[in-house]
Amino acid sequence: MTDVRRTASMSQVLADIKPYITKKFMAAPCIKEQDIQAICQILLPRYKNVQLMQGMANNKPDFRIQVKNLFGTEEKRFEVVGGNKKRPATKKKSDLGWIDRLEEIDAALDDF
View (cartoon, rainbow, N blue to C red):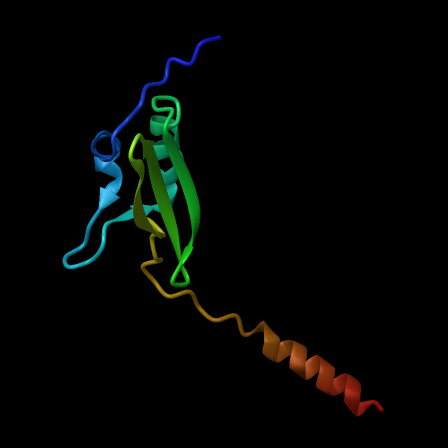
């Protein structure tokens, strides 16, 4: 079976994943955690000289794209952010059941 994947440049790779790259004002470009799988499904079947890696940099998760070519390897790093986690609109009421358990333990200790 022949490999039908082609060789890519970094600019081609970045153009392919442009919808997944987010950038906040005065911040480095980042990628949402849930988009990593889609990026892998786009790039890996299409290009043979692209490597994708996840790791940690400065105690933050990062995603690296390496494109190997004739003159070396180009690398682009993106910080991985959590995504669209919705916070509850109302604050959850505190469970006060622990007070009842303390009273049961106290009553049991009084028997000794």
